[in-house]
Each structure stands twice: as C-alpha cells, then as structure tokens.
Image 1 (tube, rainbow, N blue to C red):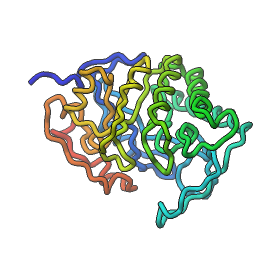
Image 2 (cartoon, helix red, strand yellow; image 1 turned 90 degrees about the vertical axis):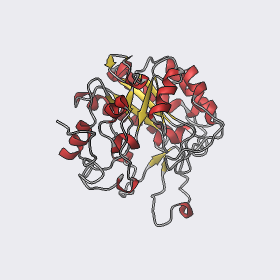
Image 3 (cartoon, rainbow, N blue to C red; image 1 turned 180 degrees about the horizontal axis):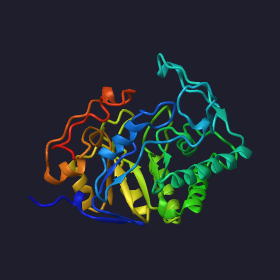
Image 4 (tube, helix red, strand yellow; image 1 turned 135 degrees about the vertical axis):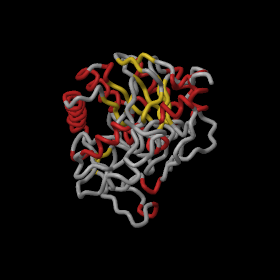
Length: 317
C-alpha cells in the first residue's frame, strides 16, 4: 500500500511537519468559566503526533469577545440585532456598534492576546475571521453597514482584519501568525454578496505579510457543517495567496490526498473525524476504519463522554 500524500512531510515557516493532517479549531466548549482544566489538556495530548500540527479551539481576546449571552453587550460593526424568529428559544443581546475611535483599542486587544498566547507556550496564533465572529462581521456586507473607513467598499470592510493581522505579526512574528477565513459561509445572518471577490482580495492582501499560513473553509460547507452543491471553489484564493494554504471542510482521506496531489492545498484540516479519532494520522497512514462521530456530544460539558473517551486504533501508550 503506497503512502498517502497526507502523510508526507511539509515545511511551514519555522515548523517542520511530518505530515499534512491538521486538527481544525473545532469548538468543544469543555472549559469551566473559560478556564481549561486537565481534561482539556488530555484531549489535545491524545491528538498529538510527532511533527503534527494542532490548532486549538477559539479563545476570546477580551470579555466583550465572548460569543455567548452572558449579559454583556456584544460589540459589532453594526447595531442591527439578529432576527428573533430565526432563533426560537434563544435570546441574544443586541450588539453595540463600535465607534471609529474605539477600533484601535480592539486591535490592541488582539495584539496583547497574541503576546499572551506565545508567552503561555503556544507556537503561534490563528486569527479567527470566520463564522460570524467580529472580524467576519466587518468583512461581510450583510452585516457591515458602516459609513466610515471600516465600511462600504470591499477594501474598507477588510481594513480591520488587516490591521489586526499587521499588529499580531509585528508583535509575535509573521511566521507565528495564521488566519482562518470563511468568505462563503453564512452563519448568524453573516454573509457577503460577492464571497469570491472577498476571499480573493483577502488572499492577495495577506500575501504581503508572509504569514505562516492562510486557512480557508470550503464553500461547499453550510452552517451545519454539511456538504452541499456549489459552483464556487477555493481555487482563486489558492492562486492569490503566496504562502502555505490550508483547506477545511468535510474532507475524507482520499479527498485530502487528491487536493494535495493537484496542488490545491498544502495542508488539510479535519474537524469531526479528528474529534472521534484521536489517532487520525495513524489511521490514515494504514487506511484503517474510522470511528463515527456523534454530533449530540460535541457541545456537552462532560469532561469525558464524547471528548476524551474516543477509542484508539490500538492500546495507546
């Protein structure tokens, strides 16, 4: 049996990777009061492999960055609330539109968060610009209704993202900095009228920073993580970005191998199957069967069930 390209080595910035199977930054929500406990360390340690690349789940850069209804008013490019009828049984506080003069403070919070992450021992940071988060809201014209230099044109809507990239890259080094983008994804009413133009513009603009990588979610992935038909692809973004390109979105072993073979990506991120298969790179290496995932356990607070109890292919020493 020939070795899959997913298991071939790759040099990414300062990191020499032994394979190209990446743990995607999937939300597991197992911290208590936002503080990771020992079971969180166990979860990530189970998924380590020599020369492997793991991206942890998102961490809020400040108290106003917590994406849950804890009573604080969320900041946003707009003050438009979510449509209540679309979220039965759930309550979201209306957002507060950031004043133009407040935005440098937000950029500074990102910079300090990146410094803290590196001082805590992380190899680097991935800037989260996906799934309706603050940066994604600024990028997309369904939400961003500003009339200042951060709104209106495509270039203006991308301004905040690029200011954050520049601040973090200057603070910890561009080779410690990555970014994740989802121009095609509709999440919490956050979408763009021309997602391909948005993705290509960001890919081109990011190239000048010489980042560790750019990480794009496939347009075929919908809000529930399911694969759907689409005329779009990440090809134009891959062509526009000069650097390591990571793709994510419902890949199998065979599809991951193919996307690397045809040059459409350098690395492939896996979420659901890396959750249910802590030894996923090893399983790919020998083409072993995969454990099925159980979505009902994804966002539980249980420190074991659906988190650290997924079986290994063989006894894990």
